[in-house]
Length: 71
Image (cartoon, rainbow, N blue to C red; front, top):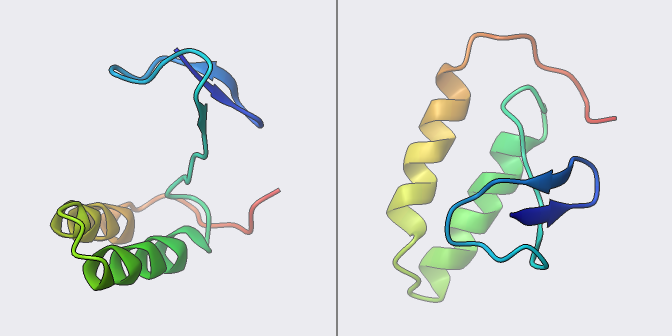
């Protein structure tokens, strides 16, 4: 179980219970931009996660729910 400052303990396989995590939600208007910046950083450092981040950005864009600023 991982630990989120906002959402408390969350079940994420492979992450230890004392490891902090930061969660971005598709409803967050700022999330796509934050993911894009992360993707650019990952690419610039040669991190293999970059293609997966691109897929997540697409999933966020396709989500049809209401977008709002984070609270």
